[in-house]
Length: 458
Image (cartoon, rainbow, N blue to C red; front, top):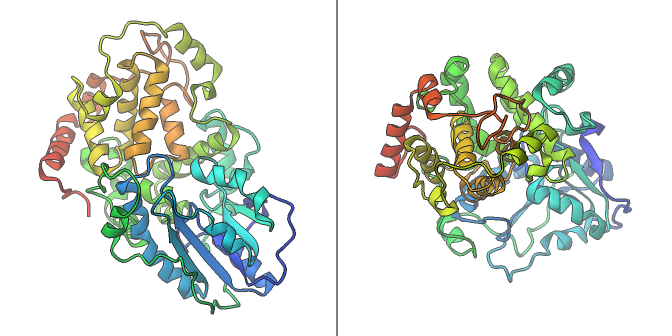
């Protein structure tokens, strides 16, 4: 059974009467495997002696809706549908193309549902839905944590750094880092799909028909969906994990998992990745301790995308150095178009423009330089979030907000004082050149830009 610590009942409504099914709304975890929310929905369906209907949707009103994000999500739909139906559940997908199209499909489905199960997610659109909808829905509404290896609810308060989070995580791992099996659904789905169900076949045409930003093209490197996620995990474990500890900070060595887009969209689960990668403690530190520290931050911080969420020491030093002179200053447009004096920074930005993500270590440098070259600290944060929202396949995520604020001192400590940064950690070009192969990285990104394809990814 799914642990009660993972599930929250978000309203006090009574179960629907004369119901036809239990409804699982796959908002953030768009997969069958190791999905605690789907498992919880199956358990509820069996207890109610009802079939299960899985509902997935893609709207056009989320922040920075564009071709890249739409394509990545749609690429995952056919395989998700296939595996849901193999369980014996029903599946319905709704693509809201125009802003004038109906936005009430969930409420329509709720009229015949005994209850709703969905994903517990601490930020962005999932958190917004889970805050607004339960009071309107009229039936029980459960949110289940299927994103973390150790449940978010295991940490009742905000943790301030990895060193406070780490021992708590390791105490819980024996209970939660275990193979997961999906319960068997006892009552098969036998009804027709709703009339508004959207078949996903020609993805290019579907994306083109949507009222979204068509200027952000699909990633040249990453294909969405469960099959692609499984391939990335398999290749990491079989070919790269042995080099991860020594080479992970140098992107031209291609030693990382590159699973962050798939984790963000729930096309693969952190538990699956952890079980496959448990022999590498350095990777487990990033995947579980650091990632779940980010989820803890987003869950317990009212505004995880604001500088006011920083620890007091960081806010004080930023205030002290707010009016320091900047040697270089760039507009948001200049940053977006990678027009700075720094060839390494430009390459980092171009990687996000082309691939839809930046290597984790180089993203720290990318963020630090935006601070150094922006007129204010708030402008710097606004620029980072704008660029992540628009271009990053792993953006709009607890890790995004945490990584951006880490550049300003979150989950870090004071360092030596200097202009603009105060006592916040500084990163410079010379240090990056000493520690990593900067020329090889720049050369690789130049090749991607010139050729428009990525021979380093499939």
